[in-house]
Image (cartoon, rainbow, N blue to C red; front, side, top):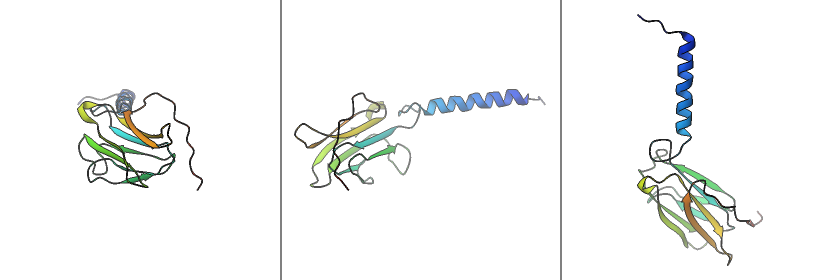
Length: 139
């Protein structure tokens, strides 16, 4: 029977944990980490987000967000059909597939356009561009 040096065993365990932590920090459906969809409402309109057909609906007021992860809370396999509607009148702001074809994690941003209406778009998570200034209604 071979003896293992306790110090070497701890060092190997530490390297394994560091490798696991680094891999989980790289989101994406390729298996390098959990894929996620981050939805941010930067408009004064209250929105309702449905991440997949028949999925849970999340209501977001101004300056609120939600992160949904693949593989948790009974989430179906990717891709998801993400639908964002304006709560006041049900107007569809976004109806788009997310997580298709090995895309990286994604985010949905709801902002106010030049006419003062809520508009939504999807992009890869961590996309560049400053957040639009918003004016949230007083509670």
